[in-house]
Image (tube, rainbow, N blue to C red):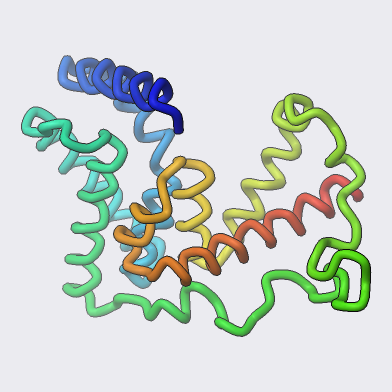
Length: 214
């Protein structure tokens, strides 16, 4: 992100915070809509069921409302909201004694993200590269972005990922969070974060291959 982008984002944050503090219900509803699904995925990192994760998210939004006037804006609004979420999820996970082991959420560490035969072998011209690209991937990015079916296919694929993979790809690719921030919030190492993100992106890519070529 460039300095201009950072300044613009900070300005948008300040304007949104002012609207929230003024009791703008539409602004609050839009904020929930923007972050809810990712918050649910992150909460699942610490608790064992969707129902408990949903309760944690609801508790988080109550905490946001109660603490908004005390928010000192030392971080972005998004970072502050997710920090509240993680703290509440950790507390709930300990209380419920249902914190889920990392391995059970992220999948088998040795499990390949996609079938190995999708990549070129060491004896081919481009070892490790994809054998074949989806036929529609040559289209303009603007055209692809406007394809609602493509977006729906991608979101379905994300929703089917193991919880931690889903949390990582949502935080990195949908929320625009940095890797350090994701590692801290999910309590994973940089190496594990990279593996989880790669697997998540690869599975979404596989789903989009089927969408484009089907």
